[in-house]
Length: 92
Image (cartoon, rainbow, N blue to C red; front, side, top):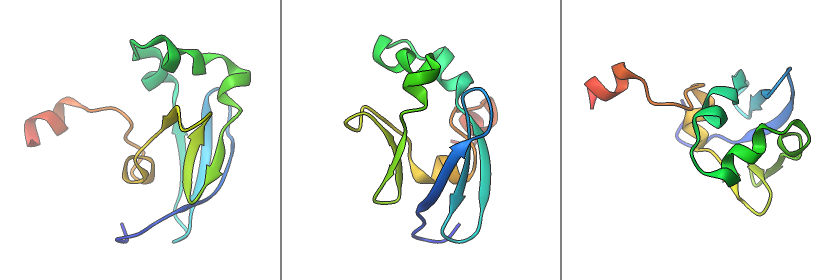
């Protein structure tokens, strides 16, 4: 991953999935359902509702919802890893 990378486009790729394109040409289809389904906070879980999820936008190279109510680290989106896994826990 380059030191600085931005999202240049995002489009729906199915139910709670987005196809993200980065300025270095990398493309990822990210499924947000597992992250949103496991969230405990109701304001995060609210994005399980399709219309609310579809309200995303790209702002200054970041993918955001609402007034920055929901956003993700670019590196996690770039590598398509929204959730910690046991392997990451063991490596830490």
